[in-house]
Length: 201
Image 1: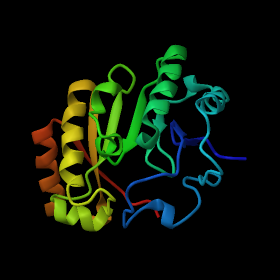
Image 2: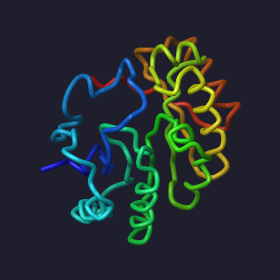
Image 3: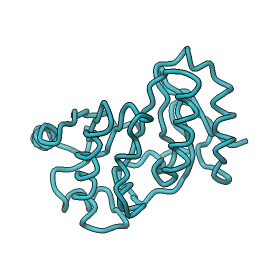
């Protein structure tokens, strides 16, 4: 049976796809089939919107602090299905909804995607990972090439206009304190909040 939704700390996470345009050097998928004690997050196939909603209905969301689109893939690979699921959640309860993303949705879809999040997504957490496009390319290995870094920053900056909370993250073990300070300056210029997250092995 596929793991479509799973608990992590105080949240329910949604695993909608295993597709991702990146191959990050620190990706958790390289270490194990699941995280935080979950069953395997490798999908036999992508679940339908109806299947995702049915899986969510198995949880009492009033007992959790948020729903997070985050699994073994980039959630915005299924942006329109994601938005349909988010609308379903909003129709049932007021639990906050977060997307953990690499920020490359505009490149995936070849359009401005941030405006579509308005009213449905409460927090967008974007992986910043580096202070410049060259280091980013070496760490993230995006299939869209060296321009991916600037596209990610542009997406994040646009999200600030449409989403209440915008966070950018770096992983502690792949950034120095000096780089983290520079990343905080980048976030400040965009209007986002920096989070230095621990590497989960």
